Structures are given as C-alpha cells and as structure tokens.
Amino acid sequence: MGIANNYQGWVYESWKILEKSIIYYQGKPIGNVAAQDPNLVALNYDQCFIRDFVPSALLLLMHGQTEIVRNFLDTTLKLQSHHKGMDYFQPGQGLMPASFKVVCNGDEEFLDADFGEHAIARVPPVDSSLWWVLLVRAYCKATQNFSFAHQQKYQEGIKLILDLCLAHRFDMFPTLLVPDGAFMIDRRMGVSGHPLEIQVLFYAALRAACELILPLDEKSKLYLQRATQRLSALHYHVRQYYWIDLQRLSEIYRYKSNQFGKEVANKFNIFAESIPDWLTNWLPEKAGYLAGNLGPGLMDFRFFSLGNLLAILVSLASKEESELIMDLFEQRWHDLIGFMPVKICFPALSGLEWRIVTGCDPKNSPWSYHNGGSWPVLLWLFAAAAQKTGKIELAERAIDIAEKRLIVDNFPEYYDGKIGRLIGKEARAFQTWTIAGLLTAKELIANPDYIEIISFEEGIEVSTQ
Ligand code: GLC
Image 1: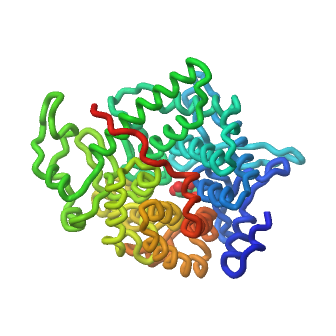
Image 2: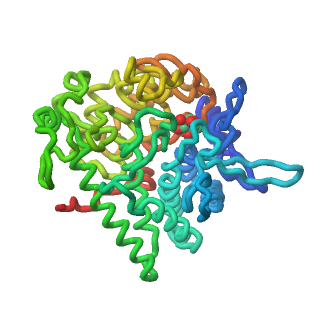
Image 3: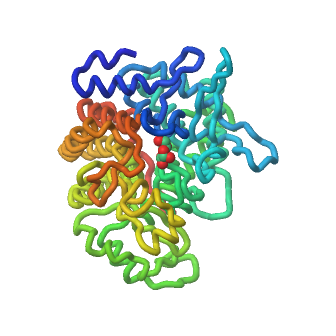
C-alpha cells in the first residue's frame, strides 16, 4: 500500500502497523485482523471483524485505497447467510458474520465466517449487517460510483438485510428487539431489548438502503416504501422517548404510573424510583443525551457514547439535541473523556447490580472493559460528531490526550479506571481499530468534507403519529 512512506514519526509507525494488519485472500487484500499482540494468544483477534474494520475502511477510502474496501464488501457479501432451512442452529438468511478469516489447506485458501456460533457466549452480530450497508454507501460516496451498489448481487444483499430487520415480530415498537451482546458490547451487560446503539445503526442503515435501492420494479418500490415508513416511525419514537434532559427528567420524576389506555403520558410505565441517584446531580442544566435502552417498565439511564455520537452523525438526534450531547461531553469531560477518550458507557455497574446484570463477569468488573472502560476507537466518532456540530476544539483536545498515550502504550484495545488512567486489564496491544480510530479522527479534523461519506443530513420529517 505504501501510505506509511508519506509520513514520519509516529504516524509512519501507525500506518506500518496498519499495513501489517491486512489480510489477503487469493492475493487480494480483503480486510484486516483485529489485533496483533505478539504476547497474547490470538483467540479470534486474528480474524477480520466487520465492526472493527469500519474505521479502517473509512480511513482507507479517505486515502483513495478503494480496492481493499471493495474486496472486503465483495467478500462479506459472499459470506452473507443464505440459510433458509429449519436448522435453528444456523444463522438466519440475510445475516452478516461477526468476523471471518482465511484458512489455508496446503495451497488452497478458504474463507471461514463466524456468525456468533464460535463467539464467546454465542452472541449474534446484529450490528454487522447494519454497518455493512453503511460501508457500501460510504464506498459509493467516496468513489462517486453508485452503480457499484446497483449491481444485482448488492441489491439482493441489501434486501435480504431489510427482510431480516423489517420482519414483523411480537413487539409493536419501530425499534429493533435484540438479545444481549448484539453489538460492540458483545457480552452480557444488560443491553438486551432495544439498545440505543442498534437503533441508531438501524436508522442509518435504513437511510443508506433508501439511497442505494433502485426503484426498478414493484418489489423494489415496496422495500423502499417499507423502509421509509419504518424510518419515520423510528425517528419519531427515538426522539420522543429516548431523549433525556433536566426538563424530561423532572417529567419522569413526576410521572403517574400504571396508566391504562392509548393516550397516556407514561406509555412505558417508567417508575420515578428507577431514576438512579447519580443522574440527578450529574445531569447539567444545559445538556442532554439519548437513553441507553427503553422497554416496558424500563429506561436504562446509562450514557452510551457510540449510540449518542452516531445519532449526531446520522441526524437521528436533532441539531439542538446534537449540540446538547456535545455540551454533555464538554461539561462532564472528566467522566466521559478523562485520561483516555472515550468512555464506552457511564457510569459502571457495581455491587449487586453488577452481579445480577453481568452475571458476575470479571472481565466487565466496574470501570473495566465494556462496563465503564475507555475505548480509543470511539475517538473517530467523537471527532466526527464534533466536526458536525462545529465543536472542533473538543475533538482536538481529545485527540491530543489520546495521541500522546496511545503511542507509548502500543495502541491498547481499551483502558480501565473511572477516568481511564490504566491500560485495560486484559487489553491487547496493537489493536487495529485503536490505530485506525486515531488516524481517522485526525483526518476528519484536517478534512471536514470527509464526514460526508458516513454522515446523513436532517431529512426525515417528524411524523405526527
Ligand atoms: C471484543 C469487543 C468487540 C470487538 C472484538 C474484536 O469482543 O467487545 O466489540 O469487535 O473484541 O476486536
């Protein structure tokens, strides 16, 4: 690839590591491994994860390295499940794998995909398909070539994903109902139900699908119609019910409960007693965010960074809300950025709550890993959201903090501690998305136009449902 040679110092070193992470199939670059820690057993970190490849793909597209992204999309499209049978131990039709690897047998090479059937706790990768559609659009935008997505095989692949997501299930919400650990947080963390991250990804993937599907026949028009209807309902639902600020918190605090009937204020029967103690002091006068989850009798008040930042980027949060989310980062800098950007969620679960919700998971002990750890990969989303809301100085501050430590610490996967001061207890070194996240964040600040390949403008009117 040779991009490293355009740079010096640590950027040169980072690109070198990134170039070394690339995996090849039949001589072609098709993705990259999750980590290259020489001192730890690889487990499945020698595989290419769809979600992990996202910041690398964006970075490569920004550098005109389109071939590897195209190969990645072609490869994963071939790996998409086409299983229609009654074997319920198989991935359902349309599902994209969590990860894949190249297996060699003598001179022959094979691709081996994992849909979660090998993964710890057998978690389903609901986010993979959604990120995949977003990457198809990013590729088309970066190359200015939408006919790529118009190929029949891509049209079919996208429609299979829509079939999976738009199917009518039991619940009557426009959000997607998923099991625990269906996305970046791929361990039991009380993120089952309707977690924010999946809803924002779903929204973005639907918007991308609407741009990519050609309305050539009645069937395609129907897909577009169903996607648009779902988008409008999803948009309304998330903005209406997930948003939290001081005013909304006061409303919830004074909610009447056990209301029966259609036109009730407390539709989800949220009890005021479920408002956690930390929140009433923590929430600034002028700031807000989207809640982590919403369901019957449930509002998860934890702050999840990925969902909130992505909501800004894809305009699921309104312009005002986007600014208020960034205000929250600014005013709670110590908690959400601290010594390493960005905190994956805040606050950590501890004590009895940790025991019950995580099932006593020692990897997710309080302020570690997914349970309040700090993940440098999220820096690219922070920079993109800062760019979109015109808060560049916040991104620059965060990049400055991250840059200094990441190089010295050999690009760890995550950091631990309330303010992210310790290298994660079980963190791998030379984690690919940590490196790509930092480089992508820097590109997004240096070249503001780059966010267009991954962002969406406000476009769907709030439905008057
Ligand atoms: C861990 C993370 C997951 C990531 C994978 C590979 O399982 O939780 O989000 O995709 O490692 O880096």
